[in-house]
Length: 392
Image 1 (cartoon, rainbow, N blue to C red):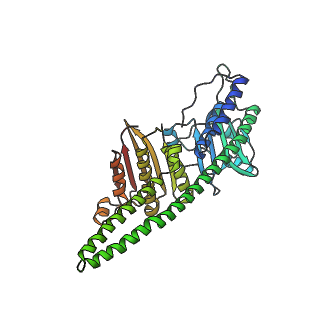
Image 2 (image 1 turned 135 degrees about the vertical axis):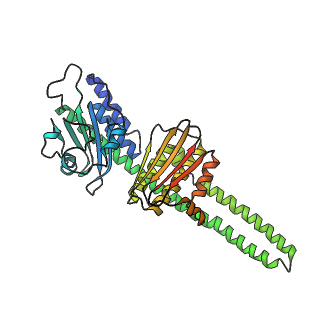
Image 3 (image 1 turned 90 degrees about the vertical axis):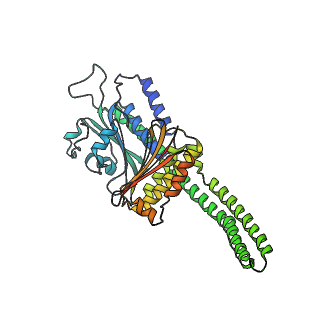
């Protein structure tokens, strides 16, 4: 989330048109839903010179599936607390589908107050984002900034022209958001088809090789006493079949590297996958990345695989309410962190029982790219898995 802009200077109509054009191009320049949403809310705040902006996407159950803000610092946002429910002014545009423009939101009879850490807001402009009869979300702007030397006693406030400009932006936002959702759905279906194809190939190739290997090994065992020479030949065949099976499996695993990783990079791929999991599971699954950077392909793939394994473990075994995935810089290193508030476990007890929960493979993946893996967990305390890789 960005800090409030300090640019309070008035702009010419030409500059406004250029800003609108840039905002529309930016909204259509990405096909990741969350990136589109963030671009919409940031563009709205800048275009209409608002100090604060937010965009809410309803979840259909009285809450918000997503709620993005701009102009509020990370520290403020964390202090505000959980996502708001659909009530008061927020509900007005989501239920009525009509814009709301107020000189002071606090005096509106629908106003229900803010959390203690919420910044103080006065003038307010809200606009639904609609596609036909469907309300996809709503834009909320507050506290219009006044140009220098033009600060009336009652504040500048949003104008009818501001409302029309936001309406235009919302219309284009609906198109951009719809396109991004269709694209992500198409990507999900493509991934599912690719997994089905690979599963079929694994069954046809590797499974048959392993079946032949088992039969040949059984034959060699039966021949050890009565025909040692033939048994040695059969064991040689076992070696050959095992090598072929390993080659086939290696080729399939290489093919499993997601195309999205090559096309979009690690951050965008993780964001897309967490969004899919967030929709598919009761737990809230989130992703956060600041200053994303490109890493060597082996490191990106290792980080992705560790994240996938950690997410799988959390969602399948820990019954969490929330799983958070983040990418961060730590000096010259890049750190992946997967944290859940689920049931947790005793790592020592897991090792003693011979159960690994994928921890061995995760450590091997980290070590293979010069990284380290740390696991912090305790019964009832959730789990934190961190993988750190050098460079980037």
